Image (tube, rainbow, N blue to C red; front, top):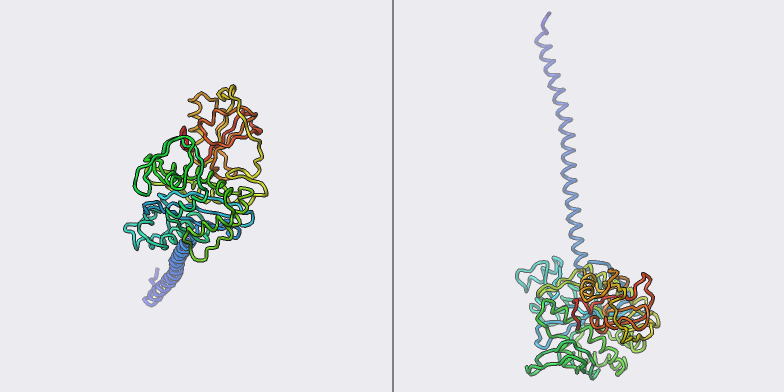
Length: 445
């Protein structure tokens, strides 16, 4: 076979080179476009993710949840100094401007709370080693004057998802002046209270039925008992006192007079108006549209850990309840509670042979079960354990009895519970809705 000429071989080689070159060019172009698309797409996605993160942080700095009925509810945070001036005691006042229903939410001063990066940056200016978890107590120590109230309000808004309309501040002396407007409040104490008065002298309030003056009342609500749940105990005492104080105050003073006394004893944020407060007191003096609650959380040692989701749920439930009030209601009770006064059969008052149902109405995990174990050890027959969350945490324990004359012995465990006769559709004889006043099993305040 005749070999190709040198010229033909050279032309054939050049053709192969051109073809290979064309193929490589095509592959290069396709590869470049693919790699470019991949890279730019990745950076685009990263930028989107970064922008989203920044936007989410901006939103988190403003609020963690859409405002709850902001147009209808006035939210004010009240700060009260203890007598030593070190710690702040806080109460959130939520007033529905349409129904005039008022919710008071008691907040622990040792609350530990998660904050955003923006707030961390602000706190780091005066607090070393700041992290995402901070306590109101530390903030109070680090910041002075109105700045700390503005900052704590900002943090509370971030945690609760509501927008505050301002803040009020009272010193201990101012708070006692306001409490003195009720003259005295009759309380039943299960344990003695020891405290130091304004002059540093050790005083003691004995257990039993006592009449607390303003200074004694302030000590009763602010002293710490040294237990692992001392802050929860303090808030429970505060709640119990206000349940007696508010009706007493409104029976002695008109709403306008109460507002005047209050206004004289507070320092308020700029633009704070007392109109809504006065209107709510006027409604309360006739219909008692005031509900008392303790902020939900868990206490361990010297820290009260706040769960923002639970708090948002609690506030939402309280606002929904306030919006549903009509022309009837009661202090710390359902607006439709028209039960007759209950009497107890002293001879047949033992409930140990009856069917008892226990419902956790305090939003405290495992509370109903703990009470069921305790009462079973005491000889009671517990037939149902469940939760009750239809209206948010209730402050005062409720006992529903199927017929008049039974259940009186349960008041040995659930002191000052609201007792009424009602239908129990599940077949039990007695139903107990355990409120925040009895979160410590077997202990009363």
